[in-house]
Length: 116
Image (cartoon, rainbow, N blue to C red; front, side, top):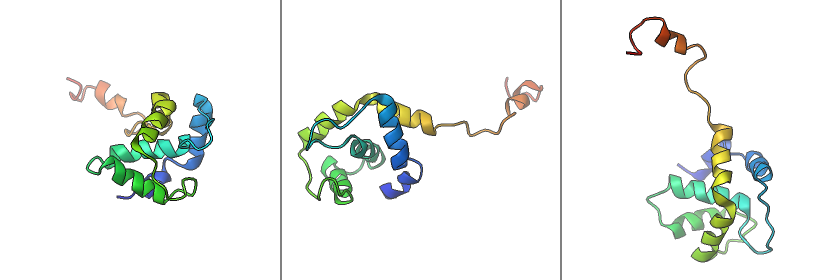
């Protein structure tokens, strides 16, 4: 699976909106962009079998902002710290929704025996 599939749900517009809502802005010129770091953090979780460098190489290659140059690991660490956990929590909350159809709780309270 490629990370591009994720952008179907975690759209650049969603990421920009969450960053705005959380008050995270790119302040330092030359620092890794916050939007890029959202996708990098998701990629680290999705591609756990790959090294940090491999994940970075895949993403940097597809980012115009970074011009194909891979920053060092400490840059990623600082950028993840600046991003903070609230941004990813908010992305999750924006996307998460119940999978069960509305009204399914009635099955559990109607005496079907499933809730016991």
